Image (cartoon, rainbow, N blue to C red; front, side):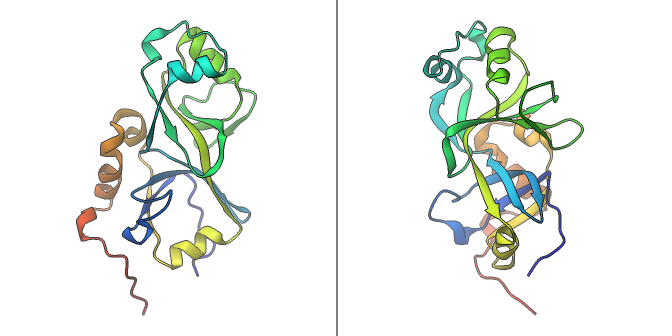
Length: 187
């Protein structure tokens, strides 16, 4: 079992063994990982929902219409009715988890109001739901070869289209997804 590893600010790359369910071909950004568990958001699964529609649903007038066409993402199977905003820079929001000196995950409505009124933060990814693991659960999945891990590169999240993010993260490891196997070898 993998222990004493902090994977905060890492990508989890779903292995082919996770072909069914919410994590099939998923790229998860881990915002927090400690002895109590892990929390992240899927960053490569856009929903059939955009910012304009989301703002209409939560009754926030979108004054920056140029942001309206940006996609909302499936962040994971936990609390899918709740929004999470992965963004840089941090800003001063009511409920933010500072992941790195430049990236935060915010779950308070004030960031959506700032987006609607001022069009900021400029770099963000809004998800509905998140991916969560209890104490030791992610480590067990890693030991079962369910995920590959690699240090996150924020440019993959904020500068690449959703359909390129998984391959870009895999290439950080210097491998090709087609060569991955769902069978683990243990010595």
